[in-house]
Image 1 (cartoon, rainbow, N blue to C red):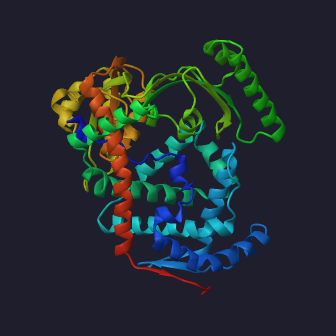
Image 2: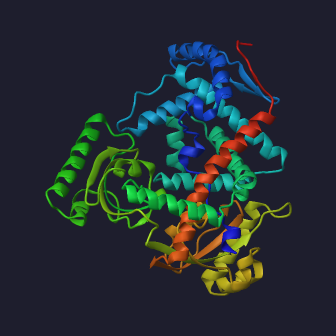
Length: 467
């Protein structure tokens, strides 16, 4: 029942996604047709990009670059998105190739905007909608994930020259696209027992050759945080602090002592977990680092990181953090909006906190999920088993704590964490974990094929001159 309600998570809705901070794909990845189309608009985009840059923020006269079915995509839309991408790439720091120019980036951004427009149109045509409450909750989540409240988020948007109204539109569009993908792609991807067996054989062969990638990692983590608006001098001082932490570890200081002295993160030992649950920057930094080895310092938006490889597993994870939770699910309908569902769940939460009703009893009475008969009990769950918006809240709860109402693709939930434990996975659970990994690989391929088909069904007209 849990798997039918919460399939493996597809696309996470973090700040980067909502701001469309997209790295341009290669022409090969997007297909020859997309590359040809991009080349056809390169000249007009480049010409006005130079004009806009020369006018120090004053945009040139706008005009249409492409028509998607009946909707236009304008030069200023492409220019604004391109500037966002370059600005955020620059703020990520670290060692990377030179940033592309606006001229080089704009055609790829146009292709991305066309893809988004096609998906948005299909979603709306087929009746998908995103309630205002879901947008507001996403705003609050983004603000919390970035270490501040809504006012701090609004200040950051102003700094980047982004209006809150346009940011809300971006959030709504990305949530709409995600729901479309979940319905039309994610729900149809299955993994057979034969595919898992084949993956196990490949792992065994790679392991025999000594080049199997780590399936699970336990990393020690030292973070020297860098404030968002740190001056170059302050950033250099923090880099030196990170170098001192690295030297301390190399000199034999243990991880916890080093963390107490230098780190701005929490518990330094991150625990053995599936490799896909680490940030990509962490995986790249430790790809060739042996157990006991150090990686870093390397820079991300958060600051300077140092990683100590404590454990690597070439097979499935042996020990993992499991959650035992229960929930109440209300599904929005024409008669019940997401906001109304959230208000109803907030009232149920108050009854639970007052002690006038138990969570289990309310779940049996109100929950619109198969788990209602069990008082909303979802049993013990492994990482990655729930969709990210559900799991992120679950990981923040303490045992016995009840969440505020949260929105997922399935509806609006009230969640109670009952227990949390470290557990060794048996053979069947390890197989299920591998099933999630194989499914994630299939999802990427299925999504690319689906999007190509969707583009093929749309009418896309490129404009080669200013209108």
